[in-house]
Length: 86
Length: 60
Length: 150
Image (tube, rainbow over all chains, first blue to last red; front, side):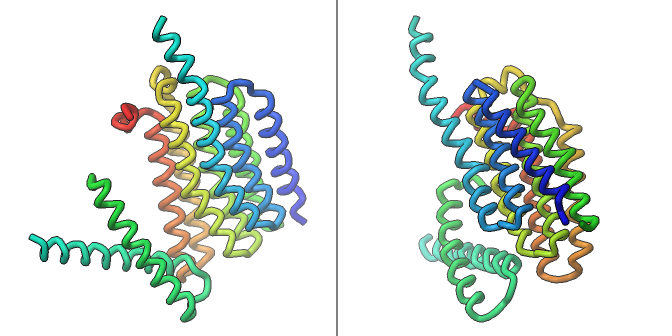
């Protein structure tokens, strides 16, 4: 009955996930993963699973990008210090 | 100035409590006694947290 | 398949699809704007879905997304501040258009809800959505200069 909606949501998830794999730089990957998290939540809603969508939103919108960006900063900072010392 | 600051603090906690309890009333689906009790308690805890946060930030 | 789900399908396909393309390609300033607008478009889509499926509980999803979407964008604005300062995004036309669309969807769903507590809840969601969208966009353009020195 709502097949076009499910198809659109599935296509969005597929496109975002492929983009997340194709993008190589970690900071830009974090951006794509944030969008992937939002689109996954929409897919779960369309498949009539709002509780799963709630958990996905809670984790995927703010927590996952924060974790990835903090790790990227931690890894990059010693490199930047070494470049400043030269 | 201790009595005046206490009075201001109590007034601020009460104001926060009213705002948060109103928000709770708007967000829930069915209104019964259990929801009111839970909402009042949660709003009270949230009011203390908001009062403490505002004192810590103190930039409003 | 009623009008609400058709509108939700159109919003997802056109809006979130364009945002997904924008976040995967192009310079950094386009990507952060696309991430911001993806959440600002998914929230009205969730409101339309809650009306289309006749499940008022789905408004909670839109409420959470209206709260957490701008938080995610602010995370990126804070942690990518140096790279964005060199090449700040200027997409205010697009941001205002998306905010206007969100307002239109909120008004439409409010009219369908009728005077009740649900109406006030939808208004709160709309305020958070538009306020969060504009705040996050301003943070991306470097508007909150004090936060960069942290």
